[in-house]
Image (tube, rainbow, N blue to C red):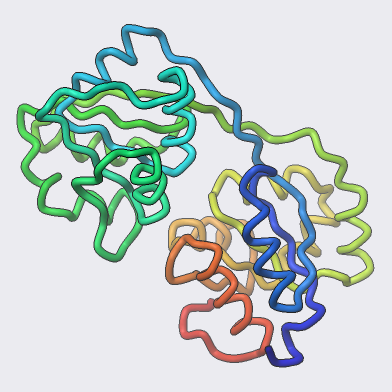
Amino acid sequence: MTPGFKGSRVLVTRPVQQAGNLCRLLTESGAVPIRFPTLEIVGVQPEPSILEAAALSDWLIFTSSNAVDFAIRAFGGKMPSLNTQLRIAAVGQATAGALLQAGWRVDCVPASEFSSEGLLAEAPLQAVAGAHCTIVRGSGGREKLAEALSSRGAEVGYLEVYSRCRPDVDSTELADHLRSDLLQAITITSVEALQNLLEMLDEAGGGLLKGLPLVVVSDRIKKTAEQLGFKQIAVSGQPTDAAILEILTTLLNGENSGRSN
């Protein structure tokens, strides 16, 4: 590890239960993770009729590893027996991994672009006319996936198994870090997490935040960050902790990643 990265303080905004691995990777690489969760994930218990309808779908489409974890909880600790024609899709490799670990097969996952757009580009989801598709997600997620599947002739329903909210976290220490110029980079993994981060600081703190290098995991988040006034934004190749670490290392060592703004 080159000296540009060692000792760098990196703001980790993942939810509490998801921050551990990235913080471990940062510590092992010589950086100093600063934990400040800007999202809290809370389980939601759907009605039994909704769970039953989901298990009878032609497609179950999981939008995140959170969707997998909380679906298992919603089904009472284990996934139900499925009808034989049901197929399972995952929006990315982490989600697919969570499904496989739970003992489920994965019939469709994007080859490269791990997003709703990437999943919709896959051949199996091009031919869904007449199929019943259930999207397993958090409350109030994006509608793009449902709209596209509906336009292709599918009947689309939702199984919402968790909700996201802004945590009640004291931002005094973070504000002190910003005023003292002690942070070197920020990591963000969703638009909502970025918006919450700014709302959890006063105007002065938000202004200081926007002057720091920001690492995001999609072009969609980058576009929002640009609109909010961030100046130096880098997009990781994949939404994984390892990819975030790689782009952080490049960014803080002053090298040209080819994907920064």
